[in-house]
Amino acid sequence: MKKSALWLLSLLLVMSVFLAACSGGGEKASTDKEPKDDGKASGEAQEGGTVTFGYTQPFKGVLSYAYYEGEDDVNALKFMHEGIFNTSEELTTVPGLADWEMSEDNTKLTIKFKEGIKWHDGEELTVEDLEYAWYLIADPTYEGARFANVEMIKGAQEYKDGKADKIEGIKIIDDYTIEVTVKSPTVNLIDNIWSYPEPKHYYGDISSKELPDSDQIRKNPIGIGPFKVKNIVPGEMIEFERFDDYWQGKPKLDGIVYKIIDGSLTQGLVQNGEIDVIEAPKDQWETIKALDNVNPQEVDALSYSYIAFDWGHYDTKKGVVVSDNKKFQNKNLRHAMAHAIDRQAFIDGFANGLGKPLNTPFPSVSWAKIDESEINAYEFDQEKAKKLLDEAGYVDKDGDGFREDPEGKPFTINFDAMAGAETSEARAQFILQSWQEVGLNAKLNGGSLKDFNLFYDTIEADDPSVETFMGAWGLASDPDPAGIWLSTDKWNMWRWYSEESDALIKKGVTFPEDPSKDVKEHRQEIYNEWQKLVNEELPVIFFEQRVDAWAVNKRVGGVKLYADGVMPNEVYNWHIVE
Image (cartoon, rainbow, N blue to C red):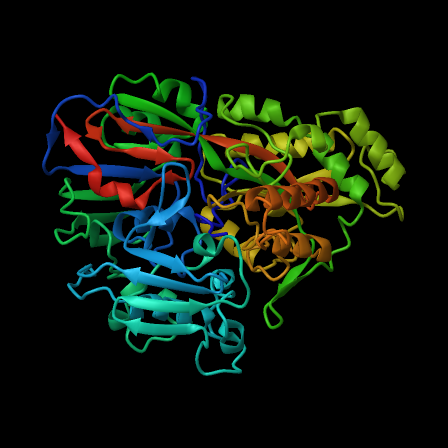
């Protein structure tokens, strides 16, 4: 599953690791999968002009798809680079820079590039740049989280383990044709295989480990997208200028400015025209969507927020999560903590009703979402939470109002959340108070919220002080949970190991044994079983599925928004209207 950000983002208490502090409400959210166009933008399209895209968290500046980690950087990447395949309005993979053909036995994929596509420095894109990206990700020194997107290539694991000096399954036919042999057939190969080329000629001899900190990625990155980097102010702003040789034709705008703002000032900046396009903070949406200069758009998102239990750590040498934290092993404790939170009240109070409680890792826009009648809804029920805690042996033995653990020892819960929105502190306190009201002594880890980068760093480093945290994920259109949920996934941030879960995830991308059976039906049955497992085991509290609220200035046309936000292959159509 190629994650749109990634980890997207554990964003503060509220939503995404990859979404910034967003809030919203108001008009009925869309329920189809069609892109939402700013069709309200009236007047003739102009040539030239600049559009400012806003975001409420500082970006790290890792401007490479192979290495970025959050929405903060992918926002910029969408303007300057793109993959060789596109996503359709129905959220399926379709040809873009390249077309493909599968062998009859589904073990060989042949990719054919268009000719004449150029990098921002004028060099031509060839299949060597895609091969190079696969080698970077499979390199033994690679520290990113995308190996799941090349692991299926025959010989990739052996190369990663240092047992081979090349990846056996890659064969270059000519400058525009490459053949890939996979270890076994999978139904979603074209959705899952890594499809973002990297400029081999530009990176030179820099190692995979060193590249994320190199000037080529941090200061002077290049891509094949409609806009090229003109200037970077680290963490604050990136100025893009039009790339006249873009493969789909010269973009209509002169440039785009990616600007980091104080989220609490969003309304005023949008109203004054200082920000043209932004995923708006939901707690300001009622006033933002009423502004005279705004075309408001609400889109059911392919994303969800969650509260994770820390199950252990990631063993970097073995490449697997180790669930050695015993604190939350009791399932009744986890269930009780879920029942203790009024998620609908949280959504209504802090997000203007944009969103609804979710109980599995698939939001309703996913075709694989199980029917709610087949799973536990974890409705808000404090009495049930208290009963479950009593049954699990968590009782208040010293009369201080807080429960001790089954051994009679003090039981406290650290909670981590991200700062950044005006209501971030209130949101965190809502969660803490919910647990405190059922007798659990929950508190902010370190006594305060963490800023964007510190939050990421703390979680990813398996800091022993982390016990629970709130984050979110943006998902790809294919429902394959690999990349986040396998025990071998670095982005399995809650560090949950389950043989049964691993087996179901791997089975979910296989072809049915009966060739007459519909593949989608086959996968739905498997994913229903997997959703029942994670819903019952509850390795994380699935908090809410999101409805994203976007403010688009009426002077900007051509902005299409999908379930996973702005699509890179559409940005060249953005324009100014009279």
